[in-house]
Amino acid sequence: MTTAVRFENYSWRYSRTKEQALKEINLEIEEGLLVGVIGPNGSGKTTLAYSMNGLIPNQYNGIRKGSVKIYDEEVTEMDQAQLCQQVGLVFSDPEAQFTAMTVEDEVVFGMENMGLTYQEIEERLDWVVPLTDIEELMEKPPYEVSGGQKQRVALASVLSMRPPVLMLDEPTSMLDPIGRRRIFDVLGRLKREYQSTIIIVEHSLENLIPLADLMVLVYEGEVLLVDETEPFFQKLDYLMEHHIYPPGVLEFFHHLKKSGDYPEASALPESVGEGEKQLRRLLENKA
Image (cartoon, rainbow, N blue to C red; front, top):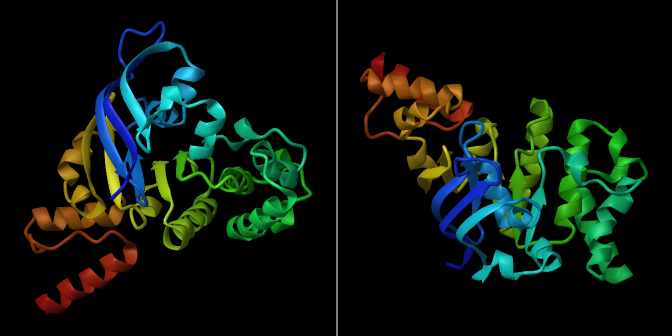
Protein backbone atom coordinates (compact mmCIF):
# COMPACT_ATOMS: atom_id res chain seq x y z
CA MET A 1 0.00 0.00 0.00
CA THR A 2 0.98 3.64 -0.53
CA THR A 3 1.95 5.64 2.53
CA ALA A 4 0.01 8.91 2.65
CA VAL A 5 1.56 10.39 5.83
CA ARG A 6 4.85 9.53 7.50
CA PHE A 7 6.36 10.97 10.70
CA GLU A 8 10.04 10.11 11.15
CA ASN A 9 11.70 10.84 14.51
CA TYR A 10 9.57 13.97 14.67
CA SER A 11 9.66 16.34 17.65
CA TRP A 12 8.24 19.80 18.21
CA ARG A 13 8.63 22.28 21.06
CA TYR A 14 6.73 25.56 21.08
CA SER A 15 8.69 28.74 21.79
CA ARG A 16 8.77 29.82 25.43
CA THR A 17 7.95 26.32 26.69
CA LYS A 18 10.31 23.86 28.34
CA GLU A 19 8.52 20.63 27.46
CA GLN A 20 8.30 19.18 23.98
CA ALA A 21 4.75 19.02 22.64
CA LEU A 22 5.68 15.97 20.54
CA LYS A 23 8.58 13.62 21.21
CA GLU A 24 10.27 11.36 18.65
CA ILE A 25 7.09 10.49 16.74
CA ASN A 26 7.34 7.63 14.25
CA LEU A 27 4.02 6.97 12.54
CA GLU A 28 2.89 5.81 9.11
CA ILE A 29 -0.65 6.20 7.77
CA GLU A 30 -1.53 4.24 4.67
CA GLU A 31 -3.63 5.67 1.86
CA GLY A 32 -7.38 5.04 2.08
CA LEU A 33 -7.57 4.44 5.84
CA LEU A 34 -9.79 6.21 8.33
CA VAL A 35 -7.60 6.82 11.37
CA GLY A 36 -8.72 7.89 14.84
CA VAL A 37 -6.25 9.89 16.96
CA ILE A 38 -7.19 9.93 20.64
CA GLY A 39 -5.66 11.02 23.93
CA PRO A 40 -6.42 13.23 26.93
CA ASN A 41 -6.46 17.02 26.64
CA GLY A 42 -3.00 18.50 26.21
CA SER A 43 -1.47 15.27 24.94
CA GLY A 44 -0.30 16.71 21.59
CA LYS A 45 -3.09 15.62 19.23
CA THR A 46 -3.70 19.06 17.71
CA THR A 47 0.03 19.65 17.37
CA LEU A 48 0.20 16.38 15.43
CA ALA A 49 -2.63 17.56 13.17
CA TYR A 50 -1.12 20.99 12.53
CA SER A 51 2.22 19.38 11.69
CA MET A 52 0.60 17.52 8.78
CA ASN A 53 -0.68 20.56 6.92
CA GLY A 54 2.18 22.98 7.57
CA LEU A 55 0.53 25.25 10.16
CA ILE A 56 3.47 23.98 12.19
CA PRO A 57 6.07 25.40 11.57
CA ASN A 58 4.67 28.03 9.15
CA GLN A 59 2.33 29.76 11.64
CA TYR A 60 3.93 28.84 14.97
CA ASN A 61 7.39 29.46 16.37
CA GLY A 62 9.31 26.60 17.89
CA ILE A 63 12.01 23.99 17.48
CA ARG A 64 11.35 21.21 14.97
CA LYS A 65 13.30 17.99 14.59
CA GLY A 66 12.78 15.03 12.28
CA SER A 67 10.42 15.06 9.32
CA VAL A 68 6.78 14.90 8.28
CA LYS A 69 6.13 13.67 4.75
CA ILE A 70 2.97 13.69 2.66
CA TYR A 71 3.29 11.11 -0.11
CA ASP A 72 7.07 11.08 0.45
CA GLU A 73 7.42 14.86 0.14
CA GLU A 74 8.64 16.80 3.17
CA VAL A 75 6.04 19.27 4.42
CA THR A 76 8.54 22.11 4.88
CA GLU A 77 9.65 21.81 1.25
CA MET A 78 6.11 22.30 -0.11
CA ASP A 79 4.63 25.77 -0.62
CA GLN A 80 1.48 26.48 1.35
CA ALA A 81 -0.85 26.47 -1.67
CA GLN A 82 0.41 23.06 -2.75
CA LEU A 83 0.18 21.71 0.79
CA CYS A 84 -3.43 22.91 1.25
CA GLN A 85 -4.38 20.93 -1.83
CA GLN A 86 -2.68 17.82 -0.42
CA VAL A 87 -3.96 18.01 3.19
CA GLY A 88 -7.35 19.53 3.96
CA LEU A 89 -7.78 20.61 7.58
CA VAL A 90 -11.15 21.10 9.29
CA PHE A 91 -10.83 22.97 12.59
CA SER A 92 -12.77 22.21 15.75
CA ASP A 93 -14.15 25.77 15.56
CA PRO A 94 -15.47 26.10 11.98
CA GLU A 95 -15.78 29.88 12.20
CA ALA A 96 -11.98 30.05 12.38
CA GLN A 97 -11.81 29.18 8.68
CA PHE A 98 -14.76 31.20 7.33
CA THR A 99 -13.91 34.12 5.03
CA ALA A 100 -17.03 34.71 2.88
CA MET A 101 -20.43 36.32 3.34
CA THR A 102 -22.51 33.37 2.10
CA VAL A 103 -22.18 29.61 2.39
CA GLU A 104 -21.95 29.30 -1.40
CA ASP A 105 -19.08 31.77 -1.59
CA GLU A 106 -17.38 29.97 1.29
CA VAL A 107 -17.51 26.61 -0.50
CA VAL A 108 -16.42 28.13 -3.82
CA PHE A 109 -13.55 30.19 -2.34
CA GLY A 110 -10.95 27.41 -2.23
CA MET A 111 -11.80 26.16 -5.71
CA GLU A 112 -11.42 29.65 -7.17
CA ASN A 113 -7.99 29.96 -5.54
CA MET A 114 -7.04 26.67 -7.20
CA GLY A 115 -7.87 28.20 -10.57
CA LEU A 116 -10.66 25.78 -11.45
CA THR A 117 -12.91 26.61 -14.38
CA TYR A 118 -16.56 27.55 -13.91
CA GLN A 119 -17.61 24.14 -15.21
CA GLU A 120 -15.25 22.33 -12.81
CA ILE A 121 -16.58 24.37 -9.89
CA GLU A 122 -20.18 23.57 -10.85
CA GLU A 123 -19.36 19.85 -11.07
CA ARG A 124 -17.76 19.85 -7.65
CA LEU A 125 -20.64 21.79 -6.13
CA ASP A 126 -23.04 19.22 -7.55
CA TRP A 127 -21.01 16.58 -5.70
CA VAL A 128 -20.18 18.19 -2.36
CA VAL A 129 -23.40 20.10 -1.60
CA PRO A 130 -25.69 17.04 -1.42
CA LEU A 131 -22.93 14.97 0.18
CA THR A 132 -22.76 17.37 3.14
CA ASP A 133 -26.48 18.24 3.07
CA ILE A 134 -26.10 22.02 2.83
CA GLU A 135 -28.48 22.71 -0.10
CA GLU A 136 -30.78 24.89 2.00
CA LEU A 137 -27.90 26.92 3.44
CA MET A 138 -26.21 28.17 0.27
CA GLU A 139 -27.57 31.74 0.39
CA LYS A 140 -27.19 32.17 4.16
CA PRO A 141 -24.23 33.76 5.97
CA PRO A 142 -22.05 30.93 7.35
CA TYR A 143 -21.83 32.67 10.74
CA GLU A 144 -25.60 32.57 11.25
CA VAL A 145 -26.37 28.86 10.82
CA SER A 146 -26.35 26.28 13.63
CA GLY A 147 -23.22 24.65 15.03
CA GLY A 148 -23.76 21.39 13.15
CA GLN A 149 -24.48 23.27 9.93
CA LYS A 150 -21.32 25.35 10.36
CA GLN A 151 -19.28 22.19 10.72
CA ARG A 152 -20.81 20.71 7.54
CA VAL A 153 -20.12 23.96 5.67
CA ALA A 154 -16.49 23.89 6.81
CA LEU A 155 -16.23 20.24 5.74
CA ALA A 156 -17.78 21.01 2.34
CA SER A 157 -15.33 23.89 1.81
CA VAL A 158 -12.37 21.57 2.34
CA LEU A 159 -13.84 18.61 0.46
CA SER A 160 -14.57 20.73 -2.60
CA MET A 161 -10.80 21.02 -3.15
CA ARG A 162 -10.58 17.20 -3.06
CA PRO A 163 -7.40 16.88 -1.01
CA PRO A 164 -6.03 13.31 -0.95
CA VAL A 165 -5.65 13.57 2.86
CA LEU A 166 -8.44 14.96 5.06
CA MET A 167 -7.52 15.98 8.62
CA LEU A 168 -10.27 16.83 11.14
CA ASP A 169 -9.36 18.30 14.53
CA GLU A 170 -12.20 17.45 16.96
CA PRO A 171 -14.92 18.16 14.38
CA THR A 172 -17.80 17.36 16.74
CA SER A 173 -16.56 19.00 19.95
CA MET A 174 -19.19 21.78 19.74
CA LEU A 175 -22.09 19.60 18.55
CA ASP A 176 -24.99 17.76 20.14
CA PRO A 177 -25.40 13.98 19.57
CA ILE A 178 -27.53 14.47 16.44
CA GLY A 179 -24.99 16.89 14.95
CA ARG A 180 -22.17 14.46 15.70
CA ARG A 181 -24.03 11.63 14.01
CA ARG A 182 -24.57 13.68 10.85
CA ILE A 183 -20.88 14.59 10.58
CA PHE A 184 -19.86 10.96 10.97
CA ASP A 185 -22.48 9.93 8.40
CA VAL A 186 -20.70 12.19 5.89
CA LEU A 187 -17.31 10.75 6.84
CA GLY A 188 -18.69 7.23 6.48
CA ARG A 189 -19.83 8.02 2.94
CA LEU A 190 -16.40 9.44 2.09
CA LYS A 191 -14.77 6.27 3.35
CA ARG A 192 -17.13 3.88 1.55
CA GLU A 193 -17.61 5.68 -1.74
CA TYR A 194 -14.36 7.57 -2.30
CA GLN A 195 -11.71 5.66 -0.29
CA SER A 196 -10.47 8.95 1.15
CA THR A 197 -7.59 9.03 3.64
CA ILE A 198 -9.22 10.53 6.73
CA ILE A 199 -7.50 11.34 10.02
CA ILE A 200 -9.76 12.37 12.91
CA VAL A 201 -8.75 13.80 16.28
CA GLU A 202 -11.85 13.00 18.30
CA HIS A 203 -13.28 12.40 21.77
CA SER A 204 -16.63 10.98 20.58
CA LEU A 205 -15.53 7.35 20.49
CA GLU A 206 -19.01 5.86 20.07
CA ASN A 207 -19.16 7.43 16.59
CA LEU A 208 -15.51 6.96 15.70
CA ILE A 209 -15.03 3.29 16.58
CA PRO A 210 -17.44 1.79 14.00
CA LEU A 211 -15.71 3.69 11.16
CA ALA A 212 -12.03 3.64 12.10
CA ASP A 213 -9.58 1.24 10.48
CA LEU A 214 -6.67 2.28 12.69
CA MET A 215 -6.38 3.93 16.11
CA VAL A 216 -3.52 6.01 17.50
CA LEU A 217 -3.07 6.82 21.21
CA VAL A 218 -1.16 10.04 21.93
CA TYR A 219 -0.15 10.65 25.53
CA GLU A 220 2.13 13.38 26.91
CA GLY A 221 3.58 14.06 23.48
CA GLU A 222 4.29 10.43 22.59
CA VAL A 223 2.55 7.90 20.38
CA LEU A 224 2.09 5.01 22.80
CA LEU A 225 -0.13 2.66 20.83
CA VAL A 226 -1.02 2.14 17.16
CA ASP A 227 -3.24 -0.74 16.11
CA GLU A 228 -6.26 -1.77 14.10
CA THR A 229 -9.45 -0.73 15.84
CA GLU A 230 -10.63 -4.07 17.22
CA PRO A 231 -7.35 -5.18 18.85
CA PHE A 232 -6.70 -1.59 19.97
CA PHE A 233 -9.84 -1.57 22.11
CA GLN A 234 -9.15 -5.02 23.50
CA LYS A 235 -6.42 -3.28 25.55
CA LEU A 236 -8.91 -1.41 27.71
CA ASP A 237 -6.94 -1.62 30.96
CA TYR A 238 -3.97 0.04 29.25
CA LEU A 239 -6.18 2.68 27.63
CA MET A 240 -7.95 3.55 30.88
CA GLU A 241 -4.59 3.84 32.64
CA HIS A 242 -3.88 6.61 30.12
CA HIS A 243 -7.21 8.38 30.68
CA ILE A 244 -9.08 6.97 27.68
CA TYR A 245 -12.59 6.01 28.70
CA PRO A 246 -14.40 3.86 26.12
CA PRO A 247 -18.12 3.76 25.31
CA GLY A 248 -20.19 2.06 28.00
CA VAL A 249 -20.85 -1.11 25.99
CA LEU A 250 -17.12 -1.77 25.61
CA GLU A 251 -16.42 -1.17 29.28
CA PHE A 252 -19.38 -3.33 30.34
CA PHE A 253 -18.19 -6.37 28.36
CA HIS A 254 -14.60 -5.73 29.43
CA HIS A 255 -15.68 -6.14 33.07
CA LEU A 256 -17.69 -9.25 32.15
CA LYS A 257 -14.56 -10.74 30.59
CA LYS A 258 -12.45 -9.92 33.65
CA SER A 259 -15.01 -11.59 35.90
CA GLY A 260 -15.03 -14.70 33.72
CA ASP A 261 -18.59 -14.20 32.48
CA TYR A 262 -17.58 -13.47 28.89
CA PRO A 263 -15.39 -15.81 26.78
CA GLU A 264 -11.74 -14.76 26.94
CA ALA A 265 -11.16 -15.27 23.22
CA SER A 266 -14.24 -13.30 22.14
CA ALA A 267 -13.91 -9.78 20.75
CA LEU A 268 -15.54 -7.00 22.72
CA PRO A 269 -18.64 -5.59 20.97
CA GLU A 270 -18.12 -2.08 19.59
CA SER A 271 -21.74 -0.93 19.36
CA VAL A 272 -24.88 -1.07 21.47
CA GLY A 273 -26.62 -3.24 18.87
CA GLU A 274 -23.75 -5.72 18.78
CA GLY A 275 -23.57 -5.71 22.58
CA GLU A 276 -27.27 -6.51 22.83
CA LYS A 277 -26.83 -9.54 20.56
CA GLN A 278 -23.85 -10.78 22.57
CA LEU A 279 -25.70 -10.32 25.86
CA ARG A 280 -28.71 -12.26 24.57
CA ARG A 281 -26.40 -15.12 23.55
CA LEU A 282 -24.81 -15.15 27.00
CA LEU A 283 -28.19 -15.28 28.72
CA GLU A 284 -29.45 -18.03 26.38
CA ASN A 285 -26.34 -20.13 27.07
CA LYS A 286 -26.84 -19.76 30.82
CA ALA A 287 -30.56 -20.58 30.68
